Image 1 (cartoon, rainbow, N blue to C red):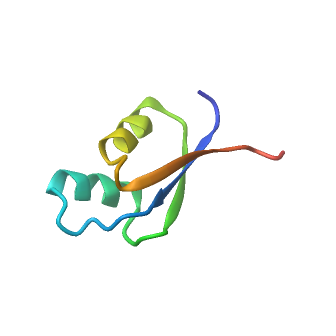
Image 2: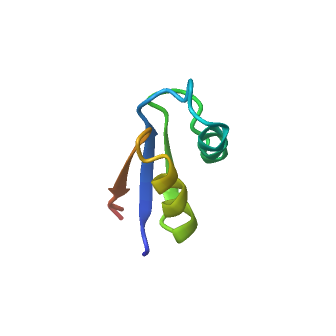
Image 3: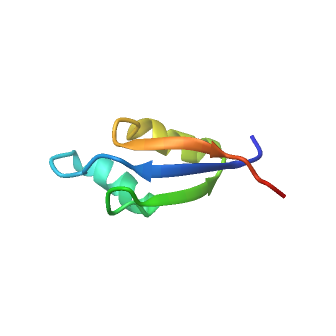
Length: 64
């Protein structure tokens, strides 16, 4: 699990449960189409799974 994940918020958090809102805020996703990069870790994967219907996650390939 070495690599990075790019997570983008694609749906609004309006009307969603407070648990989902807290997860999105902790990830730094506050506005639609905002993207954030994370190290690939089980904790991050768990957060993505909880709000998978609101975000788009893709693996980033390092070009170095």
